[in-house]
Image (tube, rainbow, N blue to C red; front, side, top):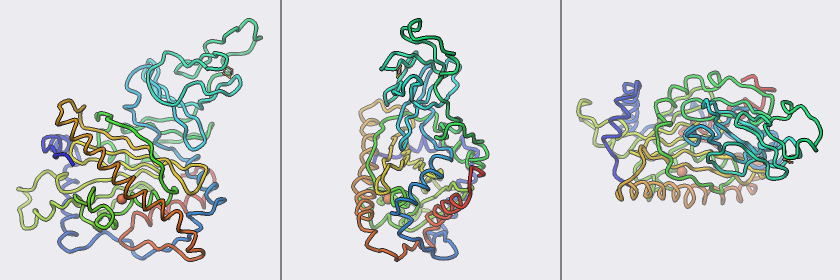
Length: 402
Ligand code: FES
Ligand SMILES: [Fe+2]
């Protein structure tokens, strides 16, 4: 792990209207550290194994939770300039996100209205138009059909009726949120509530994208559970992220279904008995995880680096694809900065691939043996409990009345 730049931390904190709140978080974490306590749920909570493996239930939950709620599909900084695009497959839906000349971001189904080809290959970049590879129908960044090869021979159609199918989309706090079901709308401010302010403090738009990769992980819930507790940190991550984090210490704040997890850094021990005026800036002593329901986790800020994880279900309840984006506070330029950023990237890759997902994949292959027994979430795993309670809550409601 590269050195933490106090300069960057100070800048981030000083500029943050939340510096008092950050200090409060350090106080809360320190109190737990001194007392060997953690934030807790009132009771332990059982959950059925079925919730993790039943295929019918899985399909219904993916439909309700992932296709009828807004998902953060990319960072705003993935579309840095006019005519940028980001194209991706999300679960089974091909999505094209564009930025027009007025910098308005839109999302579409990446499906040609002629006969269904993808109009843009997966990836990102800058294109003036999207030319379908099959018969060269051409769409602009507003999704309009602006050109047809052999138009005179094709026969007359109302071009304005054959634009790309638009998906509801909103940009907020440096992220682009999209509803995968065409025709369904959402109010991003209602969806995020006060969580917006928390995300804003991260300044995601300002960070440099260093690297992006996709990882195969265990099923959706096994994967997500691991992002929502520090109970496993000492045991599983002793050589990676656990080196910096106090195991089994969690300070939790919730914003509807979204959660902010605060972990203690080992440097908390140096604060015992020290006057607050002599404390380092808060992010030297705590680590924040912003967890956006249902599949976003932002491990910001570890010094100059930040990890954004998006966990996407697949056709199988036993596997997910995680997109990891490694951000650095500014573009690393010197050999030392590049080495530090690569070191961070490798550490989080290792923590997730060799530790979290290694054990997660084993769990996924094992859990059916528990049959009709339950999993049990501890009082010290309140964020895991909340997550599963919200899934139940959404499944008990019809439509999108969130
Ligand atoms: S399928 Fe796209 S132009 Fe024919
Ligand atoms: Fe982990």
